[in-house]
Image (tube, rainbow, N blue to C red; front, side):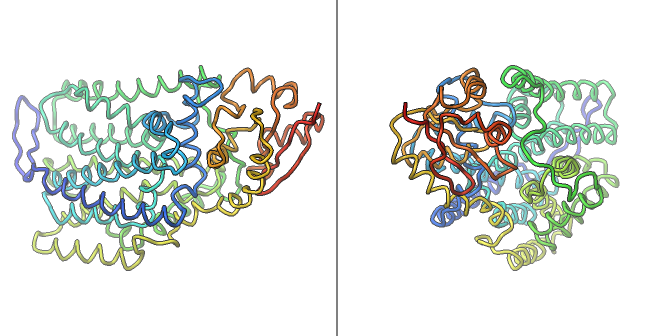
Length: 506
């Protein structure tokens, strides 16, 4: 690499500025992703995770709704994944099969592969390192499975990998302003998943450290800090205002899980769970090499100021903040929360290969990928993420009894149901011909509030109640406190934790 000094700022010039290899690797990743989608779709696993179905519902309900409008985007999940799916999910085939979300996730696989390969090439100049990073990303069975589903993690991987790639070029350039396209990228990251908030903050702090270490002028640092921070702060404020308008709270942080005392208030146990989960998802070899790669990146940057720009790649460690705070606060353990660390490990492992002498890089890259494949083949029904995604599958099969009971007697009456608890089941019912506008739920505002006040009978002809998951939904809890709430309704069937009530004949 070469370095040039212009107007007191360092310009970092990569040895390999071409994009040919990253594009080829992105195309290869897409081919693997499409094959994996066919495999998991045939196995009925693309929509096995209840959140995969719920994300489709949140996107579709903006238009398919008794009270359609922008307020339906919601305020618990960040909005970008649902905005991107807004129109595709209105097509019944894409909605029912989940293909709308899968297409977005597969696109994100290609984008993530391109950005990671470009980052490794820019910071190390290593083609074997870039290929290793993309191979570890694409062939990891847990990540590969997510890239076939409508989950939101793939979009997180794409926007954060693009962010760190762009930052290495921006910090080495002359302009202190953030280009409009990069500003849109920062907003996209801030509106994707909460992990990105910590990644954005970590990237900003690391950028400051790099500029200070490279002895950039203080005025240059100040302008860059302001130009960088205004975009994500503006995006976060806009989301908070939307949350206040739509649900009456600036930020919804509780009420959607039953606290688990296993890790609550126990920092040591929380850290151990995160470490073990990351190893289970990545494999011990990849974690060890990735750790060495991260350490080497720091050491090389300290020894050679011009190479400290690679520190930006460590910003992905910010995704640790979500599982750390969630489990410590009592959120039930979810191995899915460690998948961003798995994607980061793939990048850092590629950088570890790039830090080796060139004569050893091809051998190291090949050995690393083979070792990862030996620990976990890419298409695996026993991968931890695939197993966790099927937690609701037995209940889903049992709910078909309720679906048949409802559909065989349905005559167009509205169905009262909590979308916060049964969004995934509403998506399942689309196969029986139900649209979201057939339901009365929390997003319907005054209609939902009237139903809670008067009971379902005066408002709707049916009521679906989740009686088991998370201790039961708001309707189940209301019935337990006040059995008269269900007056005028008869419980006609129940299975898979869901009970169906029908309004009595008048």
